Image 1 (cartoon, rainbow, N blue to C red):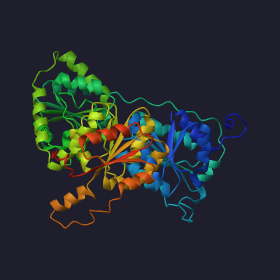
Image 2: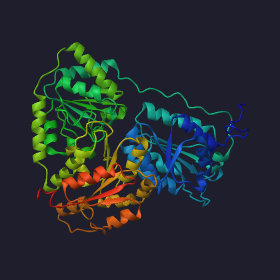
Image 3: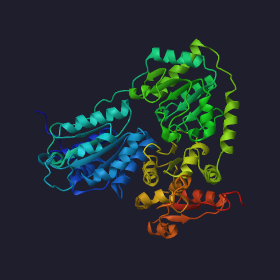
Image 4: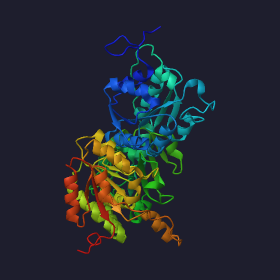
Amino acid sequence: MPDEGRIEGTNAPLRCGEATMQLLRDYGVDTVFGIPGFHTLELYRGLAQSGIRHILTRNEQGAGFMADGYARASGRPGVCVTISGPGVTNASTAVGQAYADSVPLLLLSSTNESASLGKGWGCLHETADQQRLTEPITAFSRTALAPEDVPELLGQAFGSFAAGRPRPVHVAVPLDVLEAPVAGRWAARVLPARPLAPREAIRAAAALLADAQRPVLIVGGGAVTGGSAVTALAEWLDASVIATNAGKGVVPDSHPLSLGGGLIRQAVRDHLAEADVILALGTELAPTDSFVPRLPIGGRLIRVDIDPRKLNDAYPAEAGILGDAAEAAAALLAVLEESVGAPRQGGGRARVAAVRRRMLEGLSPVERQHKAVWDALRAVLPPEAIIWGDISRIVYTGSAVMPVDLPRRWVYPAGFGALGCAVPSAIGARIACPDTPVVAVAGDGGFMFTVQELMTAAELRLPIPVVIWNDEGYGMIRAGMDAAGMARTADSPLTPNFARLAEGLGCHFARPKTAESVQAAVTAALTADAPTLIVVDEGAGWLSGER
């Protein structure tokens, strides 16, 4: 029988909770987010010994959002630790968001003692089946019924993050298992590599691209590590590039072939409808990026994805490539260069310039106000700044009009649509990338969903500008009610006194009225000793051009 694990520097046997945190450290985890509770004391005992940093949040939903923000900014798995029952259900909104957007997030929770599971004894935090609560929003949800189950389940989780579609995983450990001694020493397991695309599939897709006259690339989050290869491929093909929100910046928005995150704009969708060959790289072609139920894809479709189910879903591929999108883009370019020779010169840049003009001409008056704010932000933010957008009208507009030239720098989690994500997720991003400026942009309604997490940021003295677009209510819902010809109902909750709120939460405050004062407020906020609430009121004269 293997020797029992020992607490470092002592002869005391390791308990499962302690060994679990040490194993996370061995997988490279340096930060976890959460709130300690009586049902996670053994995990926190191990946390104190592991050297892993703990970020204390004000709600488990905030912990989940911070882990999500950490993962998106860094490319490494984010980890949140919660108690059983309400801790899991509180965090589940963030887990669902990570599932929708293919983010590697580990939810590590306790659950009730093994003998009580499923028996309905009325134990504290009891659910009928906690595992099944999170199964629909995770790659897998499992309960460790013995200490030796934990290294197997964590090995599967980190293997899934490394080589598959990186969706969240929930591992729950019963209280009695957390307290049990561990036999042997746990070690991180060797992680698999992402699969390489089959060469015959690459050649078939390259043949379609070689014959294309009006090719279009749609670039998603699955291509986030392939910026140079995807850009070179687009240049060789003289193909216009449209990004999803997750793919924004893979090809720089400033590139003359890029239409940025423009799927939300009719002019860009009209351009897509004219394509004879479409190469979709690492994207599920979801309606949440375009706000239309179906994209106008009439040309021959090539899809590259790590998830085999995506190759024949609502948009079946004529040529399907199962594998890593970044590697596949490089392989496609290599085959084209070898088999065709000279790159194409087809007037792609001129077509993109014309679409850009039509896109800007189609902005509504309020969208022009949004653009004025984004222009002010772009003028003072460095290219590497991370912008975390909440579910709000100003961020919808920003998908198309805010230029972003680097991947992982624009985050708008459109897939799940969870309001309140921006502030806690921006905190997680800043923790992951402490030397990188991070900005949160939210509407006044969604901001209030997780306002308490500003105290976490203030406690950590994080210089995060929080730009609030204030239309005094739920502006998108209000517009939808007006468009439907119905009476406005519950669209205008009481707006707080933002200045006093900021003071009470330990934050700075600004209410700029000009483009120059927005820039000054953001510039000051980036080096402040706490977050800064920057409230921009809809309809201010400078925003509508009344200078």
